[in-house]
Image 1 (tube, rainbow, N blue to C red):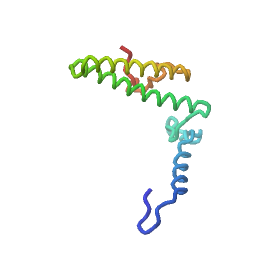
Image 2: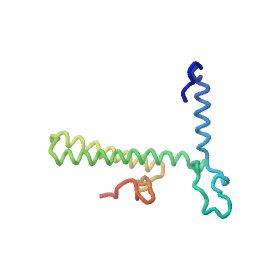
Image 3: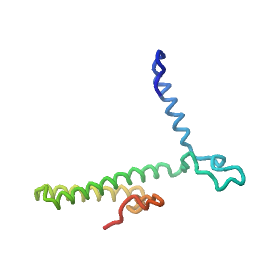
Length: 136
């Protein structure tokens, strides 16, 4: 938030307190946050993230790896388009292919290290379908 005109800028402690307050608003939804008065339809959507303290680290890692996998697939598709257009020399094509293979292997290793599969990274977006395209 911005300081009012004439007032001193917020201190670092105030900034940290504001950040902590925002973080606490993201705590798991309490049952009372999901209830509506009787007769007003189904429970309301939670206004807070519903997370399990025991799995939050793994879930965060899954999200990060999903984003990295999405970017890897986008880079791979872009590389294939460049190869198809003939924009790259043979040496560049070889280096690019080797790099993409190495990145795929590292992603598989990270998934295995944390007990995930590549399929676990394909988040279901509800009516939009899955995040990642099906494997070729």
